[in-house]
Length: 483
Image 1 (cartoon, rainbow, N blue to C red):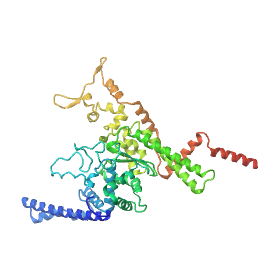
Image 2: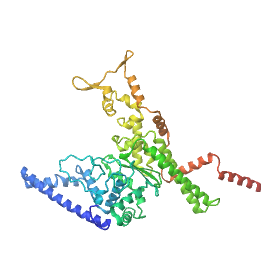
Image 3: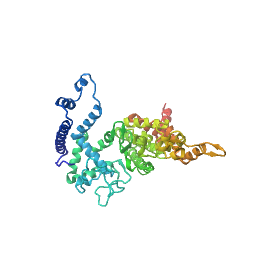
């Protein structure tokens, strides 16, 4: 966006030249700083070479050893290199447009309507929000678009990968391109599609199948993974719902279920009925294929609907827990991304086992297990706001356990524990949790879609006998009469 040219490729070339010039300038500054330091500390030329080239660097390479810190440095180096090439820069552009589409980034910085804030001094405190974010006069994220803002975005942070839908993610990203590139937006859109999806030249394909994986990598550092855009979908990748983490609330899945997913199921069921009606009693091979594909898609959507309905009553995300713990109960809703699904499932199993009882999610789901631990574990008591109940400072200002209160002449924590657990227990949540724990593991891929379609078909047959079953019975009777 900071390089002015007529194509993305030429913009990338200009940006690479700028990066090279900055790198050269940084190297020159570093050399100047080194010279000043060497002079101040009176370091000899021989020691300067040892410091500059590294102690024992050749020996370490000869032995096959890897110098300390190489992993992190190589990761950073690789990240900068990939970000400077054409596909990397194009992916960043589209990812930024997605951020604008959910209300995270300010598109006016790209159009020139708003100027970026001045660069801070080296020792200035970090701002609350990054310079590119859409914020109000107070420097905090806005709850809705400012007056006259050129891009519409959902205040609840929910978009869908569903062509023609008012919340369609691809259409929202395209609207950002229109605002930024104006009359040239179509050319830039087509070029971005050809770069990110060389086979099909379709940005919808990249956004639905590759963007979430790219997004996770961009929001990961060491062992910490914190994607802020979450893709809940079906195994085939034909449909998905996107949630923006910083606008998610505890009841968000209910609105997704009732306002988005269930209407989608009804719409696709109507489409299946039309296909069957058009095919009639003797469908062609092509028609049978279309019907089977649509049946599999409807089955996927129903499976997704069931899972959202299963999780919605118990889901209470708290970003302080970390993104993976927040999403752990939703692990079945990531069938497109097996590594991410596996990670969420592993965290979910550990949550169930009690490994993360410091989290808000654990207290929400298992208060009867977590609250009693606060009696003996002060860190847990602090995490759950119960420190003053079970702990106190003595005369030496050391934290010690409180003496249990007396009730009916007996000292003990049980009445207090019972009260605290009761206050934090919801029968609706407990019922939903039992349902979730009893649910089978969902299968993904073609096998999962076939299984879902077969299950849907068997349910239909069991529900009251289909025309196909009656026709088969009639044909069998006629055959017996003939013979």
